[in-house]
Length: 163
Image 1 (spheres, rainbow, N blue to C red):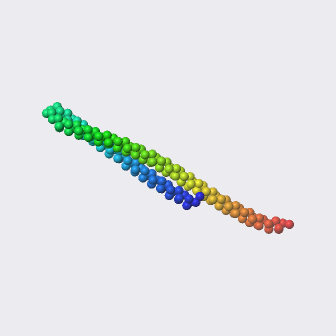
Image 2 (image 1 turned 60 degrees about the vertical axis):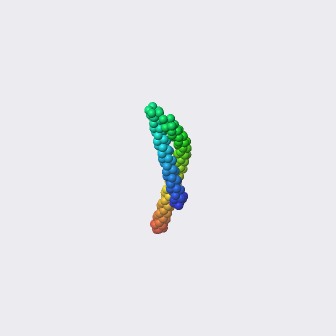
Image 3 (image 1 turned 135 degrees about the vertical axis):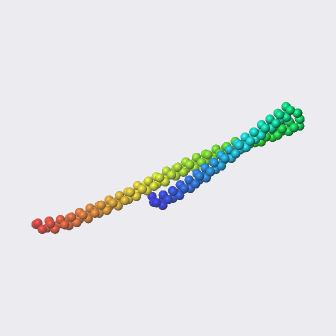
Protein backbone atom coordinates (compact mmCIF):
# COMPACT_ATOMS: atom_id res chain seq x y z
CA UNK A 1 0.00 0.00 0.00
CA UNK A 2 1.98 2.89 -1.25
CA UNK A 3 1.17 6.55 -1.38
CA UNK A 4 0.94 6.08 -5.13
CA UNK A 5 -1.94 3.64 -4.55
CA UNK A 6 -3.86 6.20 -2.46
CA UNK A 7 -3.21 8.94 -5.01
CA UNK A 8 -4.76 6.69 -7.64
CA UNK A 9 -7.91 6.25 -5.55
CA UNK A 10 -8.08 9.96 -4.79
CA UNK A 11 -7.93 10.68 -8.51
CA UNK A 12 -10.81 8.30 -9.08
CA UNK A 13 -12.70 9.97 -6.23
CA UNK A 14 -12.24 13.41 -7.84
CA UNK A 15 -13.60 11.98 -11.09
CA UNK A 16 -16.60 10.52 -9.26
CA UNK A 17 -17.28 13.87 -7.57
CA UNK A 18 -17.12 15.63 -10.93
CA UNK A 19 -19.51 13.09 -12.44
CA UNK A 20 -21.90 13.65 -9.55
CA UNK A 21 -21.72 17.42 -10.10
CA UNK A 22 -22.54 16.93 -13.79
CA UNK A 23 -25.50 14.70 -12.90
CA UNK A 24 -26.73 17.29 -10.37
CA UNK A 25 -26.54 20.01 -13.02
CA UNK A 26 -28.46 17.82 -15.49
CA UNK A 27 -31.17 17.20 -12.87
CA UNK A 28 -31.42 20.92 -12.11
CA UNK A 29 -31.75 21.66 -15.83
CA UNK A 30 -34.46 19.02 -16.24
CA UNK A 31 -36.37 20.43 -13.27
CA UNK A 32 -36.12 23.95 -14.72
CA UNK A 33 -37.58 22.65 -17.98
CA UNK A 34 -40.46 21.04 -16.09
CA UNK A 35 -41.18 24.30 -14.24
CA UNK A 36 -41.01 26.31 -17.47
CA UNK A 37 -43.41 23.89 -19.16
CA UNK A 38 -45.80 24.13 -16.20
CA UNK A 39 -45.70 27.92 -16.36
CA UNK A 40 -46.40 27.77 -20.08
CA UNK A 41 -49.32 25.38 -19.43
CA UNK A 42 -50.72 27.76 -16.82
CA UNK A 43 -50.42 30.65 -19.30
CA UNK A 44 -52.30 28.61 -21.92
CA UNK A 45 -55.04 27.77 -19.41
CA UNK A 46 -55.42 31.46 -18.50
CA UNK A 47 -55.66 32.41 -22.16
CA UNK A 48 -58.21 29.64 -22.67
CA UNK A 49 -60.35 31.02 -19.83
CA UNK A 50 -60.08 34.55 -21.27
CA UNK A 51 -61.30 33.26 -24.66
CA UNK A 52 -64.27 31.52 -23.03
CA UNK A 53 -65.16 34.61 -21.01
CA UNK A 54 -64.91 36.79 -24.12
CA UNK A 55 -67.15 34.41 -26.06
CA UNK A 56 -69.62 34.42 -23.19
CA UNK A 57 -69.62 38.21 -23.06
CA UNK A 58 -70.23 38.46 -26.80
CA UNK A 59 -73.01 35.85 -26.62
CA UNK A 60 -74.78 37.80 -23.85
CA UNK A 61 -74.52 41.14 -25.61
CA UNK A 62 -74.87 41.77 -29.31
CA UNK A 63 -74.82 38.22 -30.72
CA UNK A 64 -72.50 37.70 -33.69
CA UNK A 65 -72.31 33.98 -34.49
CA UNK A 66 -69.10 34.28 -36.54
CA UNK A 67 -67.29 36.09 -33.77
CA UNK A 68 -68.49 33.63 -31.09
CA UNK A 69 -67.45 30.73 -33.34
CA UNK A 70 -63.97 32.25 -33.74
CA UNK A 71 -63.57 32.53 -29.96
CA UNK A 72 -64.64 28.90 -29.49
CA UNK A 73 -62.28 27.78 -32.26
CA UNK A 74 -59.50 29.71 -30.57
CA UNK A 75 -60.44 28.08 -27.25
CA UNK A 76 -60.30 24.60 -28.83
CA UNK A 77 -56.93 25.46 -30.34
CA UNK A 78 -55.71 26.48 -26.89
CA UNK A 79 -57.13 23.24 -25.43
CA UNK A 80 -55.10 21.23 -27.97
CA UNK A 81 -52.01 23.27 -27.11
CA UNK A 82 -52.68 22.62 -23.42
CA UNK A 83 -53.02 18.88 -24.03
CA UNK A 84 -49.77 18.85 -25.98
CA UNK A 85 -48.08 20.81 -23.20
CA UNK A 86 -49.42 18.34 -20.62
CA UNK A 87 -47.82 15.51 -22.62
CA UNK A 88 -44.57 17.49 -22.75
CA UNK A 89 -44.73 18.02 -19.00
CA UNK A 90 -45.18 14.28 -18.37
CA UNK A 91 -42.25 13.53 -20.66
CA UNK A 92 -40.07 16.15 -18.96
CA UNK A 93 -41.06 14.82 -15.53
CA UNK A 94 -39.99 11.32 -16.62
CA UNK A 95 -36.67 12.69 -17.83
CA UNK A 96 -36.22 14.56 -14.54
CA UNK A 97 -36.94 11.35 -12.63
CA UNK A 98 -34.32 9.50 -14.71
CA UNK A 99 -31.83 12.27 -13.95
CA UNK A 100 -32.66 12.01 -10.24
CA UNK A 101 -32.02 8.25 -10.28
CA UNK A 102 -28.73 8.82 -12.13
CA UNK A 103 -27.71 11.39 -9.54
CA UNK A 104 -28.52 9.02 -6.68
CA UNK A 105 -26.46 6.28 -8.34
CA UNK A 106 -23.60 8.69 -8.89
CA UNK A 107 -23.74 9.84 -5.26
CA UNK A 108 -23.65 6.22 -4.06
CA UNK A 109 -20.64 5.53 -6.26
CA UNK A 110 -18.88 8.61 -4.89
CA UNK A 111 -19.61 7.58 -1.29
CA UNK A 112 -18.21 4.10 -1.99
CA UNK A 113 -15.04 5.68 -3.37
CA UNK A 114 -14.78 7.99 -0.36
CA UNK A 115 -14.98 5.02 1.99
CA UNK A 116 -12.41 3.14 -0.09
CA UNK A 117 -10.03 6.10 0.02
CA UNK A 118 -10.54 6.41 3.78
CA UNK A 119 -9.87 2.69 4.27
CA UNK A 120 -6.78 2.83 2.08
CA UNK A 121 -5.46 5.87 3.93
CA UNK A 122 -6.18 4.21 7.26
CA UNK A 123 -4.50 0.99 6.14
CA UNK A 124 -1.54 2.98 4.84
CA UNK A 125 -1.22 4.83 8.14
CA UNK A 126 -1.42 1.55 10.07
CA UNK A 127 1.21 0.03 7.79
CA UNK A 128 3.52 3.03 8.24
CA UNK A 129 3.08 2.88 12.03
CA UNK A 130 3.89 -0.84 12.02
CA UNK A 131 7.00 -0.19 9.92
CA UNK A 132 8.06 2.63 12.25
CA UNK A 133 7.44 0.42 15.27
CA UNK A 134 9.43 -2.40 13.68
CA UNK A 135 12.29 0.01 12.99
CA UNK A 136 12.14 1.32 16.56
CA UNK A 137 12.03 -2.23 17.93
CA UNK A 138 15.00 -3.19 15.76
CA UNK A 139 16.94 -0.14 16.93
CA UNK A 140 16.08 -0.89 20.58
CA UNK A 141 17.10 -4.54 20.15
CA UNK A 142 20.37 -3.51 18.54
CA UNK A 143 21.08 -1.00 21.33
CA UNK A 144 20.26 -3.58 23.98
CA UNK A 145 22.52 -6.15 22.28
CA UNK A 146 25.32 -3.60 22.06
CA UNK A 147 24.89 -2.69 25.72
CA UNK A 148 24.90 -6.34 26.70
CA UNK A 149 28.00 -7.11 24.68
CA UNK A 150 29.78 -4.04 26.04
CA UNK A 151 28.72 -4.98 29.57
CA UNK A 152 29.96 -8.52 28.96
CA UNK A 153 33.30 -7.21 27.71
CA UNK A 154 33.74 -4.96 30.71
CA UNK A 155 32.67 -7.77 33.05
CA UNK A 156 35.13 -10.30 31.61
CA UNK A 157 38.28 -8.51 32.69
CA UNK A 158 37.00 -8.28 36.28
CA UNK A 159 36.42 -12.03 36.30
CA UNK A 160 39.92 -12.69 34.98
CA UNK A 161 41.58 -10.67 37.73
CA UNK A 162 40.05 -12.57 40.63
CA UNK A 163 41.39 -16.10 39.99
